[in-house]
Length: 481
Ligand SMILES: Cc1ncc(COP(=O)(O)O)c(C=O)c1O
Image: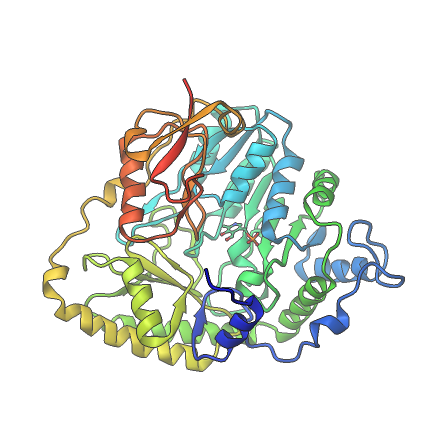
């Protein structure tokens, strides 16, 4: 074990030429913030209290609410995570039922756990050419609401990590027809409300969702951990959600974080979409160049209506290696080692480059050069290209059977068994790759041969498989019979 100081390591890294195609959205490119110690205070006279806002924090959040045209907007200092937990717990009764898309982030599952909920899943469609999840079909929402009239809330992630947006307006219409609130996890779409042009999707708040949660830090110039929750005008559940915000947020919220959020919203509002327009032009260039590639493919934007896709966020570059026999991990390692470009995420056969309005031109030309060279390099690796991708297709869109709720399985008597020998058992823990943190298996779900195959595939490709108590997913905790 080496004795290293984190601050020194961060400073050393900041001095390198590694370029971030990952969060946070400020891209380490904001230079006019004061010395953090000089403005780091607590709730002293004149600076209000986030848990009982009456002064400057109330004014800033009211300003945010005017910008977003919401009923209420609240600053979140514990990320979208605490907004999701509060929305789920605030809008459901203990032991109730939630309708939730299966590709939700682990924080949604934790909300389900805390309130001991039963889940009815909405399975996203699959974009098989790219091996990613597509949109949620409004008709699936309708069917589930009719099948389970006791559903208390709907939770959908849109956009997905890869930028896929579902038909929120239609889903909101169906939800409201059934008198059920719609929560949209728009963690990856915090930039949508600020776009005027450039083909960015419309924010779920504008499309009628009741509660929308956005991580400012993911795509906008704000510190990591900062997010906002919006409640639509006229929405009746605001107070219940706010009660939970005081549970899930620290009692010592950072004034640096709150100042960073307030600054971010004002800066983006004043910018009137200019930076996002430039970003759209820059990513269009990358997509255009990729049309000349022989091996690498970038998810195009003209997939409306395909696989439940209503819209696509152009700022997410999903770079696919399908058909090459190479993995997402291979490409991210190649980009890191060969070009000092750090990606946001690797999937089985794609990588995700996350861009933001604070990216620099230099980043885009380095990415274009790297991808052009790597595409040629892959073309020469003929033998590898002959490998096919069999074994992945049938593992996408797997349906899960859950004999127990997450709460029951998490609190059951358990035993640890080898993952390879766990088929037919009920899991007591999560297994996911992080990012994106979507569970391959959640507590209470039956482990099938296909799920084991999927997790083994993640491990074979060196992806960060997390969640199990052994730390490696060689073993898994199952519910004892
Ligand atoms: C879809 C989605 N929702 C919610 C979250 C949680 O956001 P935060 O990190 O701001 O708590 C994440 C984090 O990656 C996410 O990908």
